[in-house]
Image (cartoon, rainbow, N blue to C red):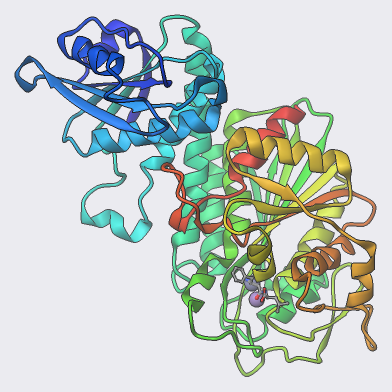
Length: 485
Ligand code: BES
Ligand code: MN
Ligand code: ZN
């Protein structure tokens, strides 16, 4: 699949010409089908409501015109463009054609942003689950070329298209890792995949193995790993540009399968717990994009990874462990394991003395109950960081919603035998989990994104969503990091 920027004349010569049109706008297209479509619009037989489609044929079937509605122009944003572009691409891919011209008849979204939105949406709409690829083709739009019209400001549009392809591919990498089953994507394989990505994108990468974790006293990761036959890892990816004034650490939960451990989960839907590494996948995806887009900010990606199994040596409720930060934890429930591995990951991040730490994790079912499948829960100890991340999420179409971090939550984590326990009450479970994490970031500005409701099974938005992994977090992080430098 290719995405290019072209003139109106070249785009119009494609097998299919698609026009994304706001409601109430007249169609200007000087061809036979163009005139037919314009007449239908004038008579209001078709209204350009958001994502409505109309496919028309002319010239004995040799000319194809697809109209896709954008809805009300004054409400149009990049997300509206993404969704409509994905609708156009999917409709085109059902037609057994090669070339598709795309024209967006609105100036509401500026050229660079528009190019990025279109390219990102088409790239993400082409995503197909890894195991299904052998059936037919690599992606859903194989062999197709999309030509986005830019008669004015072609350079800005082209820059946007390039960015959109990078960001879309990075999100797809995170989705692919997420959709891989737990027997295939072990911590060792996750480390291999991230090392491979680092090599091709030009990042420094380092993998800490079990012996290294022991040396660093990472009792959280090692405690969770006790019941497993697969060794744990901690992945570290570094992007360091020549010029930078800020350093950011990204930390992602890389739990390759969560059975709950000795506090075993019920069987229903347990297969979904292969997605428990999606926070880690988001960090790896974001690092891929950052390495290629090269903003002036230093970024270190950290992914602690293990599975959570109930083997004979597994940790038990009531066990205590010592984290790398020196804080001891009483393990009340072995299914609250994400916070244990993140405790060590976050502490590792503090050693970089970063300006900001952001972690991403499929941390709690409670967050899904609170927010559903539309936005990640956003917890932070800094209001400025909260604002930046919320805004970046809105621009990127990758939402996060601010949630409170009450200091009273700490009272719920008091243990009689250790510095803290890993379980609070059921009520407010996403907040106490975040409160637990806050103990491991020192004085650093930090935010936590609970992506349990958005990493898979998210709302269908044409280019993303549905049962498969969504790449949640990748686009939000890239948008924010670009704004820092
Ligand atoms: N990985 C799960 C969280 C999860 C559950 C994400 C369902 C998405 C859907 C996490 O490790 C977990 O098991 N959390 C427990 C915490 C509880 C034991 C305090 C939960 O949410 O039930
Ligand atoms: Mn769990
Ligand atoms: Zn988990």
